[in-house]
Every structure is written in structure tokens, then in C-alpha cells.
Image (cartoon, rainbow, N blue to C red; front, side, top):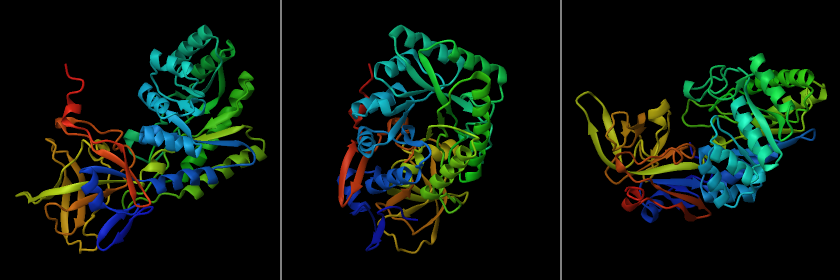
Length: 430
């Protein structure tokens, strides 16, 4: 499947008007390539279809998916909020010139430094994870004389049918507090009521990632509506904001059936509007935090094919010049991808391969089963939908260099992250 401005011309894959072969020639291999037009399209689609006349809406891009200064500048230009989760992400947002009053700050174990940075730079909304963190924030806000707006992260206990490692709303999750832990929730609500420097605007919940079933979100709205009404009545607190998190699934392989942005946005808006109309809920702002669904399909990783090898055990390997250092997801949670030989797009796919990298790990496999044309050294392998959690999770294992990142649009490519050099590997050595 091709995405955005991808096309096949003269047996060559093109992205944003540039062939994969030319991109490799100009910028080296491996290479992260982002279709800038598709990112813009996705951002604008969320803003268009996730809107209501009954309440305000905010799209907060989940920066953990992919964040660079160039991405920050794009988000600022598109008028999107930004979801941050560390001092490093905050530093990147500052360097990119982002308006931090439109930023949200997450984390289950925020450091004193991170809380101070949030206060000193005027981060608009802080997600409180637990009562200890709330106490730290109250102390710091009081000392600085500031009023800080927060959401409490809670677990609604809604089951999301996805990989165990990316489910986040179970009652045993490390994130947030269970809405069914009445004693703990009461203690937190009372703490909010007993002081004036940290304001509870509402609640944040996030049920997981790579979710295709919209009913999981509809169930979450139902559960959270009941919970918000209970809290409002019991503690006489004004709850104005609900954050449903993200996790909207995207296409990786033929087994994936994601909902489009328009359907997702309108379905969620309609469900919450019905709650407002029937007076089952009264909120002023609804927030979602898409990340993967904005950048995943816009990203393609280009590799150069080295050798192929058929083992005595029956495996037919195709080796590329990268691997788990530039995409850890297959090794981490068995993520699956689709791919093509980018310089031979229309050749017959008559050879079965396992695509493996060059790292000293047996688990360094990018694609376990795929049909491709019989590959030759120097062919270019394009693995699709690598825009999320690849660059963000890249490493220097085996002292490999992290690839460059380029944005491509209208036949032009621009480097937004330069390729590492060997001297970069020694930068922090003493």
C-alpha cells in the first residue's frame, strides 16, 4: 500500500516527487524519509473532523512518536497543541519556538527538575499521575506563587485489544490511578480542595495504542462520564476538561483495519455531544492526543540491500545496512511491516525473504516473512509506515550511526536531522 504522495513511476518508488534512489544518493543510507504533505494533511484532518459546537476541542500531538525542532515548528505553524513527557522533549519544544502555554506535560515519575521547568516556562497543562506528585507540585506552585492547571490521569479499566506492552488502562498499569480505587481517589480530590495553587481542570485517560475498535473509545466515554458526574457530586468540584488520550490505529500490514481520521473524529464527537445534550455530562474542553496516526504512514525507511543468504535450516535472509538500531519495534513487540524494493516496484515478487539487519543479535529482524523480487546487492528496500517510534527509539547499539531524517515535499528534500558521524559516537566519552 502506498501513502500520501507516494507513487510508482518507471519501476521506481517516489515520495513527494523524489525517487527513493535519488534520496539515497543525496542523503545516504539508511534514511528516514517523511512525506511532509501527508503529515500536514493528517494534522488538518484531525482539526477539521474533531470539532464541536457544544464544547472546545484540542489536538495535542503526542511527541513521543516523533519529535525534532522541524516537527515542533510545523506543529506551531499548524496551530496544534503538543504533548510532552520529559525534560528533553520540553527542551526540544523550547528550541523549536513552541508556545508552551499550548503544551501538555505527562509522566508517571516527573523529576523535580521537570516540574520546575514546567512552572518556569509556563506549560499550560500538567497531567498529575499520583498523590505524591500532586504534593510536590502544590509545594512548588505555592513557593513560586503560581496557579497551575492540571488533569489527573486515571485508569478507566476499559479493555483495548492490542499488544500487552502498549495497553495502559488496566488497573495494574503504572500510569495514573484507577477510578475504582475510591479511597485513593477521595484522598486526591480532598488534597485538591484543601489548597488553591494547583487547580483540577479534569481528567486524562489513555487506554492503549494501535487500537482499531472504536467501541473501546465509546466505552471509555461512557465510563468517564459516570466517573466525572460522581466526582462532581461527591466533592463539589467543577470538572471542565476530559482528555481521551490517543492510540488510534494505523495501517502497517494487510491485517490492519484502521478507521479513517474523519470517521474516528466524528464518532467520538457525536458520542460526547449526546452526553452533553442529555445532561449526562457537562464539559467545556475535549482533548485527544494523536501521534502515531499523524506521522506513522508519512514515514518510510530506505535501506540498501547487501547480501542474501539461504541457511541450512531453510531461512532465506535479505540483509540490509540498518536494523534494530533504527527500528526496534519488531524486536520489542513483534511489530509487522510491509515493504518493496523501491528501485524495482513492478518486478514480480517471486522470492520469499526474512529481512534482517546487521546487528549482533539473532532478534535483529525487521520483517519475518515477505515476498519480494529476487534481490541484488545495491537494491533499495523501502519499509513503509515507519514514521512513529523509529527515530524516537533509535540507538547506537554496536556503535552504529543513527540515520539522517529528511522531509520531502513538492520534489524537494530537506535534512531535518543530520546523519551521525563517528565523532558523534565519541562526543560524550571521557
